[in-house]
Length: 376
Image (cartoon, rainbow, N blue to C red):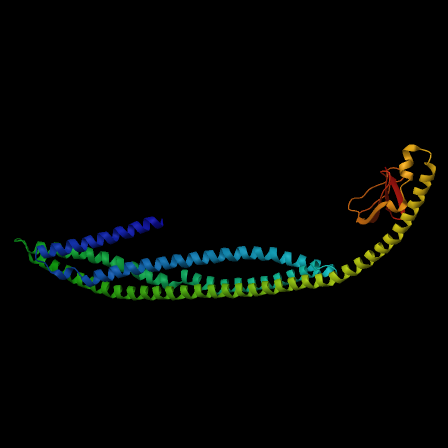
């Protein structure tokens, strides 16, 4: 429909220009009054056409802005519901599970509180967009001032068509009055047609000035108010994003500080718990290694006495006690082990094992948790 209107408007303008050109050429050719074609009226008509197109484009822009802002408000309301629910859940967790050992509850509470503040800022933005952007533009779109100016333009177009028709009638009467068989009746009709044309021209001129002034006022108002509403929208969005950025900066600083504070509290505790265990293990390792060495020497001596008659074991019997090579170290269990046979040990992750290795006749001795196990 809008395309058809545009085509009709262009055709009407082209026909009007062609009529004016034909009348001007016709009057000059046959020596008629050139005042039948009013150049000022033609300029006024062109000016009104430009104003009509400008105000129509501005109205479409206002309508697009209103539709876009309304869609933005609708989506923002849905987002607010989601974010508010998330903030409430985070605050609930932070309030219910406060613990000095973990930073998550505090961070969750700060997160929920900050996002609640952010959603309040979004509410203010939506209110400003609705009250200061949508409403003024919607009022202008449906306002009477634009419709009144357009109505004057429509009246001007109708009067202009009447003037064109009356101009053609005057030209026809003038041609007829110059014929040889012209009568007094023809002259009288010519005078009547010229008087009517003058009257229509006066009406058209006054209506053209009025319509032009009205359309220019509407155009200026559209330009001014639309720019002001766009500027108000930019100011509101700018203030909103600045507030949100400030809230997020504060939230980030609080979360980082909470993390650092939690790490500083946990670090001394870890050191205190490790140092005593290491000291105990070292003392235990030293004392029990000595016992293990003593018991090993006893076993070696007994083994030497019982195997003196065996020539194959004479070499082992002749080995002095101080020639034994021993190695001991502390190891932490990283994989659990369940004992399956006698002499095996049950080990759990985190246990510390003192291992003593004695190189004697391809035998190895392992000690763990006050027990000695022999593995060939």
